[in-house]
Image (cartoon, rainbow, N blue to C red; front, top):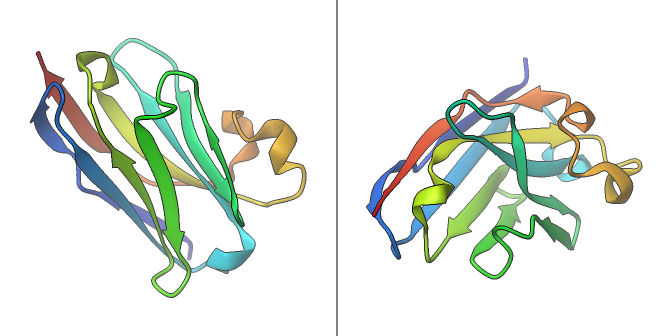
Length: 125
């Protein structure tokens, strides 16, 4: 049974930082590409960041502020979020994808087969 469990969300002031973690089990972690999405209230899922081997992908809205990384020994992917803004407020989800064709479709929600339950990030102004 595949499980993805996010943690590390919370309430932070604008300009602050948070580090999200996504612990996985039941899948060959090193064989999957991993991504982070977010969903703000009343909006659709938005791609945030993705990682496939050594290649990283970011949305324009977080580039330069967020960093995605992974630890294969811990089967965990991270999202370091710096210089947070109120518009970053959302539920953040991690997701796992097969690596085939990832560079062309990393931003598509449909590309990912497995999802976590999400963790709330709230940035106050």
